Length: 87
Length: 93
Image (cartoon, rainbow over all chains, first blue to last red; front, side, top):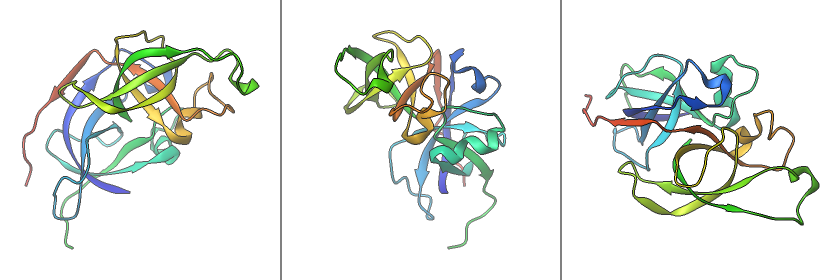
């Protein structure tokens, strides 16, 4: 699981069918000091995160689990909105 | 997933027999301002994308979670064609 910040969103009408209804957001990976540590990725939003919010996301094929669909070609999904970080 | 642009296709007759019928696209990775990076993937298309289109690509074992890549030696799949991007760099606390 990783920390990130939502920095934008993507509209794609033509996408794999099990993704319909899911928002796709741009996330910039952060460290615990909220510094950007890698290039932005695209993640499926399953918690209703908005631009600017600090979130946590999971990668690899586990990213499909919160989507509750049988199969989806997704390798990153947002699973939580962060209230505070003490590190 | 990563943002990409389809820049070409790859034809291969001698390949793993599980890959027969799969169409391979060359997908160049993009920065958020849509400028091309050096890196790219060879990906299978699952949504009918063509050369020149801005797409989204999933990599790793998630790429096998479609009905056309299931149980195949494929680690990258094009799963969406981008209509519009909205980048808002509003800083949170």
